[in-house]
Length: 411
Ligand SMILES: [Zn+2]
Image (cartoon, rainbow, N blue to C red):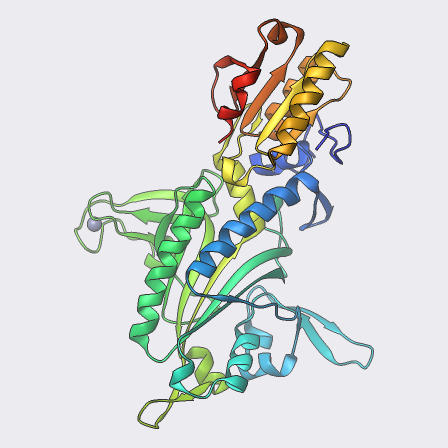
């Protein structure tokens, strides 16, 4: 992609209301733009990162044996009345009326939808277990939405639902999802901590959250350095010592990037989702649900991967693999840069090529702000050595590499 044609206008300063680093940098680097309170537009750079995150998640879901569907955003009120969450879910539903005065709502989560789908189709133990996921926009009627992508009113979420014949089978799968989640976050450059959590209005008996320590995090967790126990303070209350080994607990502020629930038979009981067992008995299906909010994950990656000049994208989620920058616009430099750009495209490399008529200072500042993992510079000076100057975004040193040799630097 030629940067002269990229729909991206970097900005020197962040919007006044931006408090968090991710909000500031994602806005300044023009990955996102606010439409109105808590509602964002994903611009080309932002959408590229989003797609990479989505693919990482999708792959891990498929590895778990889950099948992808797309459920409606508009919710069937009668299903929500069955679980009584039409009134009780927190934050409350975004409700609306159609032209016949019939009420519906924008889906914040899909337990009702999926349980209804299940009970209409599944009859026998032979159809179990079953794992279904989707990646779709959700709507949350938040009291306040600040912090950029950390808390929005409309956002994409991956939600996975699992159906099992018994609790034991659910528990096995639940542990597999835990591992898959850690893997997803690791690929996104985040070290997550899995903690015991409270289940809120989703319900069920057991739930775990995936937390990333950060000073701006709204959740507080306690961790035991000795035995590894970790829990959300919402769950434990204000305890000081570990319940297992009595060690003094450490407190940390965290951002929650994933939440998984052992729902047991909460929804199957309320909505009568049953199957017939091997011995012919009719039993309630046992369920789990597992969520990851994609914009929040994207913001958290920035919170944990940046410096004073801008974002430092981990390579798996970076908008481009490398940033090729042309300094000076004489024919010699231009021709060499164009040739290298075309060679890279032919090799299928995802390259952003800064061919703009701007000063080197402006180009470098933009490159640091946007945060592509590798920066390749071609100038009169590097061409004297038949070379490209390569710098990793997260390192200080630069090195000159012969153009004939340069492709070995692409990882
Ligand atoms: Zn302990």
